[in-house]
Length: 562
Image (cartoon, rainbow, N blue to C red; front, top):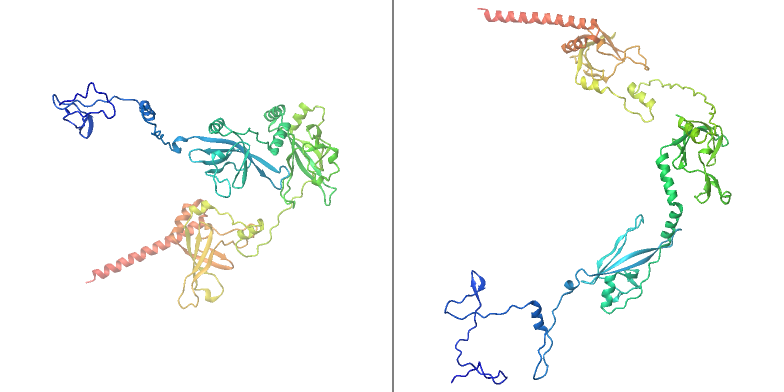
């Protein structure tokens, strides 16, 4: 019996029938796999069935199918609503920050200008992790370390460890963080819309109170420098910079104990009407080396009568107390002017000052006043006599300087004649009979004109040989300490007598290098010195030849003897 389930029977609960003609109960495969990838499957001709086709629906239609609730014809609605999709906070509130504006009050101790400060801050609240940070906007030339006051972190609101949440924040409220009380005054538009969307009613915003010290300082600056005043100062700087009036004056200090009249120079700077007084330094005057008597400043000419009874030694005059400052018209040659309680007689000026007064103040007559120019006595420095300790040059440095300096050396001579030494053989010319057989070697160093003497040891003489004189400069007999004369290469020749500190030596021989060196500088060496050395070396050369010839003859006779 076959039942036709496709036509005529209603599809009602309890009235469903199984299709007895259905013989294949497998799921139709719509995809096939090729090389590991799923591809649409194509049925072979006459084999299998066509794949099931499904209509593509959009993402919005799929969400609507999930959220739509079917209307039931029978029964009751016992099915719950499907759960909504969960969105994490770091994705929902990413880059969403609440910004509040406020300030905190800082007490200032031991300051006559201010008792407290108002420091504006910006408070940022990050919704993704409920962290906060406090940043103070930097103010130019404030002198206070500004910037990030509290780094980004979760802040506690009480001693129980509870943390601040955006629900706890509102306008016109105090927030205590780490012992500092921050006052929130207003917020930006995004913060206001977010708080209102969450059902929080914000208070009315308020303004940040002004800092009294900053207000007073800005007011004083505006009052002191007006636009016209600024332009006038700029014009004076561009036209009168580096223009200085110079007066030569005498400071009359004769009223004080051991007072005197001392010459000074007064500089008047036209760019800002400031005055500078420089004192003339006299060598060996015994005064401290302070050339500036009064540093550059504007000198008041008239001050308010209320400041006159105050002691002038501790009086600090401000711009409000000064009625008039000294100007170019108050400085006249031949007249006495009182500057900072001291009297100065203007005697003369330079050419630029004269030209300036002729162009700007023709009514002022510039007549130079003669001053007492007593010529200073030229005191000649008298050097003490040489005491014999150390070299003459070292002792002279002790007399020239308080802190002695080493005497200067001829560096070129040292470099050119380094390791150049003239050697002579000498004997001691003495009346003492034991000194007749003593032989010496005299070394003359061309780099520094020093002499050293060594004694040759003699067997059974009873005198130990070795160093007789250290390297030193030897003066000639009869020379004075003021202008000493020292021995040089031109003073040494065969047979010459050299006196070294009361010991007389007679030169008997020399090295061949002595003759070659003196011939290279023959223009500075006397002829008798060169002739004595040439004669000595010619005789020695002949004797050497005779000895060599005699030795060769004897050697020939020995070898040719039968």
